[in-house]
Each structure stands twice: as structure tokens, then as C-alpha cells.
Image (tube, rainbow, N blue to C red):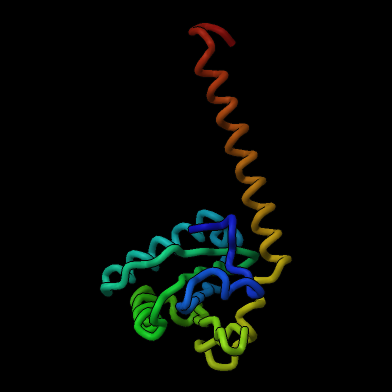
Length: 162
């Protein structure tokens, strides 16, 4: 999942050439689930579910924030992908926790198709959420680098050194 270039509502039409962009938001998540790891797991589950339905996922993008994960994918024909996404989410018993939308190029607007009457989908794709996710990723990378440094220095010590 590409977190460096999350789906931006103002630039969504530039993410694909002549096709459609669909989005799925998984909601009401605990904070421990709605981070980078949860987003990676959600992407893997959706991608594998789509493959099982005969749809090869294109380059997907994503974003996470407090209580939600968003997954996006460009496609040449949104209708079969949307039907497959619905089937996968229902099989996983995640349908009721999900919002599904597509980017309407003619209206330059994210059109939510599930659930009916939901708030605009692009609320997930705000600059604030993008910046927050980038900060969380940067902080996570700092922790990983610090751990690598500790492991590397401990591996370089001779036996018996403290």
C-alpha cells in the first residue's frame, strides 16, 4: 500500500489515466488497529479477496487515521470491482463497518454509495489526516531505526562485554 502518496481528493483524477478510482473506508476501529499495520492487513485482505473473485488489484493507495483505514484502487471499470468489494466485505463480516465510494470525475466529487446518506467520503482524505498519517509513519520509522541501532551495536559486542 502506498502511504507516501495517499489518495488526495483534489488530485484524485491525476492518480489514474482514463479509469475510475474507488475507495473503501473501514470504520470504528480501535487506535491499535487503525495504524500502518492495520492498513497493511486491510489491504492484504481486500487484495486477496478481490483476487479470489477474479480481479487483480491495481496499484492501491491508503491512509489511516483515528478510528479508520482507507483503501483506494484505480480501475478501468468500477462496477465489477465495486460488486466484488461488496462481496468480499460481506464475507469478512465488515460490510456494516465500511463505507464505499468512487471518485466522480465529471463532478470532481467522491460519491459514497454505501451506506446511503453517509457523510462525504473525502472527509477521510483531508490534508489534516494525510499529515497526521505521515507523522505517525515517520515516528514509527524512528522507533524501527532506533531498535536497529541497538540490535546492531549489541551484535557487534564481543561475548562477555556489557
